[in-house]
Image 1 (cartoon, rainbow, N blue to C red):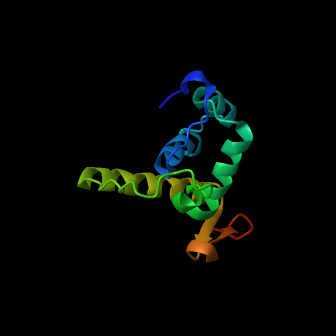
Image 2: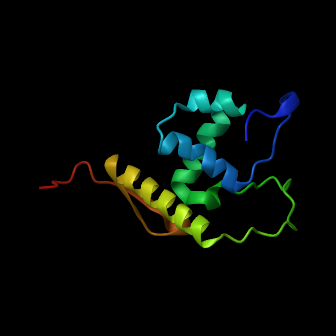
Length: 120
């Protein structure tokens, strides 16, 4: 998954968007570098990040209707399921390091800071 040929806009799946964002969230790669590497507008990348942090992979679903609805979902192998679970735990770990926790689920999801609490 690199730079698209001919500068065309590429429709990416939520999984592809998540993989790109994990380079920032886990590997701490600068968004400007990711933007350049994947030929993604920096503002769009920041929007993906915000939606992902708020709603997880569901927030990365395209609302434009350009993606085909008939494509079957790929069933994950046991190894892929475990890798996905590890990635999600690493993301949660990064959130906790930055001082916030997630309360609720789906649309009721809320990010609460823990920085002002006494942790002793």
